[in-house]
Image (cartoon, rainbow, N blue to C red; front, top):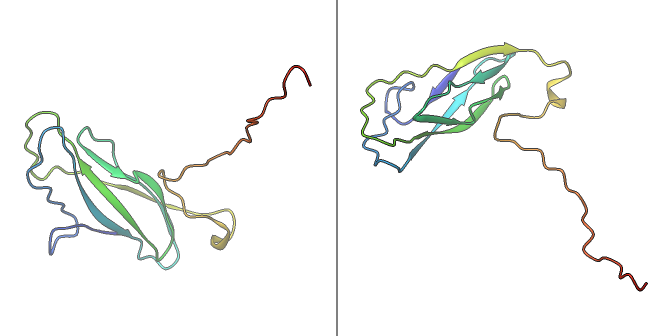
Amino acid sequence: MVCCGTVAGRCDVMKFGDVFIGEGRTLSLTMTNHSQSSAVKFVWPDDPHVKFSPRLGHLRADCSKDMTVTLNVDKPLTLSLHELKCRVVRIVYDRPVSDVADWDDRLKTVKWIAACTHRPSADA
């Protein structure tokens, strides 16, 4: 598993620089599963200042997923080597991988309900 962010030569470090109070700064990274056979579930920790999107999901063998990391602060704060470890666990699907949709917590299920916009009058 490899996550590559924005600091040259270091795939495990993200540098946000100065961030104004009340304004977030978002950086991107790509998480890659280099296994040829094992899918994994990943979970980033909850943190009061750093938010990952997606925070949890599945990453199939030999696949990548683009992610964002946002730093928000509501008071002056210095974070120097603020370590956040992603938990990664191998998973096995109960059906062929070709039948399993990609999944993470950004995905939403929408149920459309038909709404009647015309009501019959009481005289009808």
